[in-house]
Amino acid sequence: MYKWIVVLFCAFFAACGGGGGSGGTDDSGSVSSSASSDTYAKVGLVFTDATSQEYKSAEVTFTKAELVGDDGRVTLFSGEQTLDLLKLPDFYEFVDTAEVPPGDYQSVWITATKVTLTTEDDSGNDVVKEAKLPSGVIKVLSKSGFSVAPGDVLFLEIDFDMNKALKLTETGNGKIILRPVVFANIYSQPPRDKFIRLHGVVENIEGLTFDLCQTQLITDSVNPLSGSEEHCFNIVTDEATGIFGSSGLPLEEDLQEGDSITVIGRLSAMLSSLPDIPNGQLPPPGMCRIWYLDLEPGQQLAPVDCDDIDAVPENAVVIGHEGLKTAFLFSVHAYTIEEGPLTAFSRYSGLVMTPVDEISSQFEFDVDDGQGIDATSSLPVQLFEKTRIFSDDGMEMGIEDVTAGRSARIDAVFSISDTEPDVLRSPFVLLAGDAEDQDMLEGTVVTLDELSGMIEVQTESLETVIVDAGEARVFLITDSESAFSSEEISLSEAPVGTAIEAFGEEDELSGNFIAEVVFIKAE
Image 1 (spheres, rainbow, N blue to C red):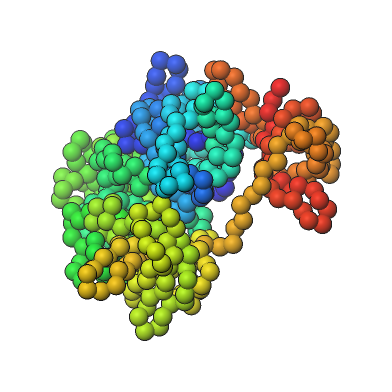
Image 2 (image 1 turned 60 degrees about the horizontal axis):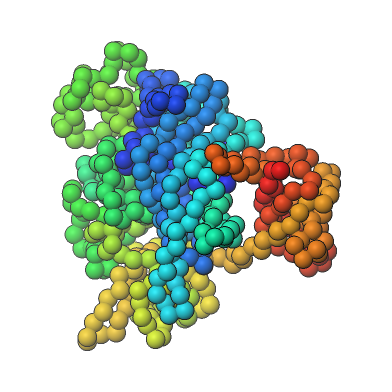
C-alpha cells in the first residue's frame, strides 16, 4: 500500500514523548483515537530530512497535531516537543505509535510555536537566530485524501526538505519568516532507502533478538522519553551485525539487559494487520497473555503475570489489558549497534581523500568544518571487520567503493593519543551520491498551458522564463493571520497573475526551467 500527501511545513507526527500516541478529546471538538483492537489502525510515525549547507541546526517546537476527516478532528499529539530537524539527513527517527480510527482523512493541522536557526559567522562562531512561522496553525490539505481501515498497521513518513525550506525564508523588520517544505507518505512497509536509528535500553534478550525501549530521540539528546511501552521495538541481529563499545572498538562481550545502546538498521512491521481479539479476551490489569495468531480465541492460553513471560513463539504476540504490546508491532533488523550514551558516537561529514588501505583498513578523511574537530589536515578513519558501508540510497557497499573525492558521513569515536596518531574509529559509513542542489525560480504567473505543462513566468527583473511543470507537483499556498495552508492542485487550477516559486534546474538545450515542485500563492 502506498498513499501520499505532500505538505508545506512539518506535517503531523504524533506523541513525541510528552503527548502519548493514544489520541484524545479537546475543547475544540477533536475526537479520541482510542478504540478496541478490531476497530482502530496502528500507525508508526517516522520522520526524516534532507541536508542543508547553510544552517547547523533548525530547532522547531511543536505543541499539537490533528488529523481532520469525515468524522471530525483526531488529536494525535498535544504537549510540547522541540526537535532539531537537521539531524535527519539519511535516516528515520521513530517518534511514536498512534491509534487512528478507521475512516477517510483529508488534512492535517499542526500547531508550532517556535523556530531557532543556528549558523556560523566568518570566525566559526555560532550565530543563533529566532525565526517566525507564517501563522500558529498550519493546515495541510490533501488532493485526494487517504483512507485508514480497521486493523491496518501502517507507517506515516514525514520527509522534511529543509534545504528547500530555508530558501523560502523571508526577512523584514529584522525577522525571519520560515516556510519549511515537507512530504508525507503512508506505507505498509517503509522504503529501503532509509535507515532507522533508535537509542534506548536492552531488555528481554532471547538468542539473536531482544527488545529495545527508547529513552531518547536522536534529534533531542537532552530530554528523555516517558518510558512508555509505546516506544519499544523487537531488534533482530545476525552474524553480520557489528556491536561496538563506547571506545569505538568492536565489543568483545555480549550485550546485557540494561545496556544503553543505539541501533542502526531497517524498520519493518511484524504484523500486516492487528489480531482480532474479541471482547472479554483481554487479560486483567497487570496480567498478560500469549496470543497465538493461528489459534481460535477458545484455544488460547490463560493469562499470567507479565513478568513470567520469558519467551514468545514466532507465531504469537503478547497482549495486555489495553491490547497488543507495541513491541510486537515493529521490528528493526540491526546492522550496527553502538554501546553507551547517545553522545558516545558522533556523526561527521566530509570528503574521502584516499582509498582504503588493505593492510591497515584505514582511509584518509577530510572532516567538514564546524563539527568540533580542529584538524589542519585529513584524519585516518579506522574500519573494522564488521564496519558496515552503505550508499545514501540504501545499497550495501564494500571497501572498494570508498574512493577518493567521494562525500561521506561516518559514525565514529575520535580517539586522541599521545603515543599514536589520532584516529576516527568508525562502525558505520554512509557514502553520498552525486545529488545536486536545486535552483529556485521566483516570479509571477503570466500564462499557463495545462496540456503542455508550460508556465510563462515574469521574474522581478522583468525577464520572461518558461517553466516546464509537466512532471511537477503543484501546490496552492494560502496565508492568513489565523492559519497557513497548502493544497496540492492540478495545473489547470493554478491562478494566473499570482506569485510562483519553482524548484528545479535549467535545461541547457531548451533554456526552459524544468520544475520538480511548484508553489503558487493564492490571491
